[in-house]
Length: 235
Image: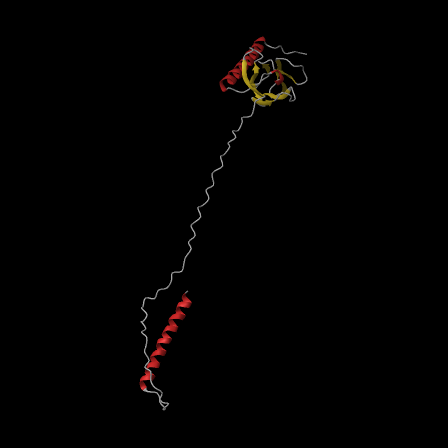
């Protein structure tokens, strides 16, 4: 049985071709700015008061979104934040190799009871490191903020001075007094009428002068009675 021999020159060409492809892929990654590090959040904020439950745990979901296998270095730069792979012990730095599109959870352990009152910030970085030349291909930062025992802003209490109620001045009551009615016409002056004494005559018939005098007296008396009645109705 004849076995074909492999030409050393062919192997050399294959090795050069593979390195060329790898170099081209690396250059393409750098030029296009491809992301390797994909994380669930880049900012975390907590409000903490003394006596609250501690520590605080956050699961940082990471994924290699690049085109090749890389190493993920996760580092905490504060002594009150620890980072470690799920299931491992707490540490300040964790390094794990991740294949393309491989997800992984890291735990961020926050210890707010160690902090002083006020606003406290910490930083955690996630780096994608090339396994060949150990260059950093991508880097993401997670900023952690803890507001410890912050007092709520007091709302100023405004006391309103009661406004003086001005009561309306009562209008003066006008009492109307009836004005006596003064007729615009003047009453005729009555002069006493002297009735001549006439001796009785045996004849019952009255003279014409006596009849006229009685008629005038009746008219005058009627006028006086009308004026009296008018004044009574008026007052």
